[in-house]
Length: 176
Image (cartoon, rainbow, N blue to C red):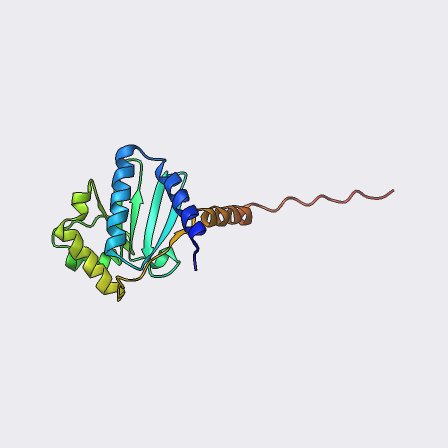
């Protein structure tokens, strides 16, 4: 169970990631986050910060694993995108061909404003994604905010350490 201090700490860390964007991006990102929290009650928000790309990803998942997310909100310096898991399977629910990308697992819709999120076509995609995931949302449940940014950095450091060549062994000097 997450206590109030941990929740406040997570919120302040998320605020620090939002601070990397201009005012318009921050306002849009926060408004879309609020809409997604209202639309997907009880799901955890898993936060990833990718410093090199300056991208912030908030995945909405029934577990503490971002890879099990129903959808993800991603902020980039020049765009805001809503990613859908099972993207290729959602093509039947997308007669207007809003979904972009060619990934095997996900597709996305670029959002220029909150009004884009409120379109009926996006709600249709959201409903189809929920149906595919077989999730039942509980409007009384409260999801948690989980920051995975540090864990992500540690995993990258470990990966770099394992790919480095081992230092060359010195040959022992012959004794005289």
